[in-house]
Image 1 (tube, rainbow, N blue to C red):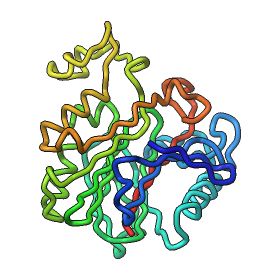
Image 2: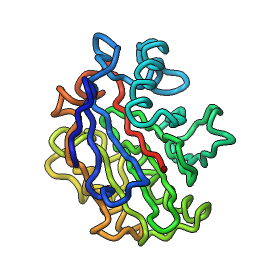
Image 3: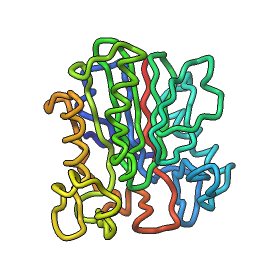
Length: 257
């Protein structure tokens, strides 16, 4: 990953996408926004789900989202969905990009549509089809891993854009690292095949688990970049629900030119 600073904004881009100028993928830190308190300062979510307000105001989130949009491209149309830790995948186009979506994965092959995923500890998987110039972004916490939303995103891109797994480059955002991935109820929450990724009692390497799922889905190992930055550990840069409970959400945005 590469770090970038733009005025007070701070964000990261991914080395694996460097050779593709018609793709932009960035994970913004919590710096450079207008929010205060536990949401300080670039919080991009006022609601974790349609039913659960995280305690932030819509006005601040709108301002923060506009800060991100302007930093990337004035032509960009920002699209986000209600994320419910499920496996629903939404195909986004210029015709429907103003609709209210529910889903944890967004895909498109149209330019200037900024696919925004809100996250605090959960992973964001960014999928770029180098042959068909198509894009997918997926929100994956442990529930998304259990549902294997990454595999389902690949399948949706194949169905809609003719994507082959071997032509995909994948980056996984900063997220909860093995040092803080404690799951006391893993015996009931995780399938047995996940237990192999336990690094010490009750702690799991979700980065390694995700890489394994991607490879099983046909992604080439050399085509995967994992940020390996723990959102819990880097309190100065990232929101973390596990660390703070009352927390803002980081923003990862990807779009095609």
